[in-house]
Structures are given as C-alpha cells and as structure tokens.
Image 1 (cartoon, one colour):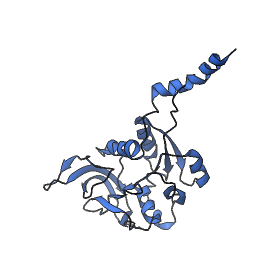
Image 2 (tube, rainbow, N blue to C red):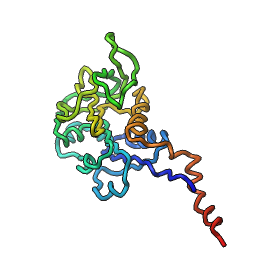
Image 3 (tube, rainbow, N blue to C red):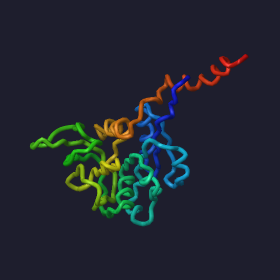
Length: 231
C-alpha cells in the first residue's frame, strides 16, 4: 500500500503578489504538497481541502489598496485551528482583521533591510545572519511594501523590527499565527527558506511526503493494484 502523499498539505491564498508562485515553489521544494487559490475562497472550500497550515501571500505593489477595501482573508482562516503565516500584504490583512492597524505611506520600502529579532519565536528561533553588539540576532531580508502595520493585535507580540518598520515580524505563539513584512520566499532574504521550513515542517508538522520518488510511486500504484486484484 502506498503512502498518502497528500496527507499533509498547505493552502496558499493569493492576494496578487508577483512572488506568490514562488511561495508555492518553496513549499514544494520542502517536499510538502500545496495548492494556490484566490483569496476569496469559501469556508466550505477550506474545510474540504483540510489544510495543515495556511499561508497568506503578498499583494499588489500599489500602496493604499488594503486601506481602500482591498482583499481580506476569509474569516474562517483564523478560526480553523491551523497555523497561519502572513507574508507582507498577508501580514497586513491578518493584523487588520484581528484588531491591529495598518497605515499608508508616501514612501515605499523596496530592497534590502536588516531585521533585529527582539523576542523569541518558534518561527525564527536559532535563525540568524549576524548578531548585534549586544548579541541579538539580525536577519538580512527583502522588503517590498508601501503600507505597513502600525499596531499589532492585542494578543500578538513584536518579534522583530527595523529602523523604519517597527513590526517586521509579529506572532501569536498560542494560536500559531505569524506575520512578516518582508518576503521570505525570495533568495534576497538569506534565511527565508529556513523560516518557511520552520513554519511548514515544525509549526505545521508537515512531513516531506511530496517528493519525486513518492509522486511516481503514487502515480503507478493504482494500475499495480488492479493487476494484483485481477482473478
């Protein structure tokens, strides 16, 4: 009997980022099955998919969209009892929907930034590019945003910040909700793959079942079974 390679699965909700397909690619590189859906899915569709975790992608490059009635995550995302990881716009809509605040800016932050980790979190524990003079971890990341979170929900903590972005990473460890203002899926974020791995493998507890060898085994298994069962 072949192993169920779809047993663990990640749902990625697409808010329009140019990098969204790259998020899916990174998850699959970790050996985990995932599907990429438009943001306006129904509760019934999410229940039917039964994800091990949900990633909210980044959004359009235009500033102010989230403040002018832009896309929101289905509320069930935050009620499903599974880990949620908001990336850039995904973090912003998570913050707004759970009681935080987002404000627009006349200046976009685009390019390299250095994030200082202030609080221990399962998402970045033991992950660093360098250290501050007083021993705090620093992460080299890639920013691409105009709007930013100016107040996090009351049950979240600030995990990391930059000089211009006070809430670069936020977390609710109890609910396993995480948000990052930068893009971990791009190679410019040097430890981004480790963060995605931490979320997918450790926090969501997904095994690496979606591998080329196992996909082939899964594809040839049904005919083999038919032959074995033939009279």
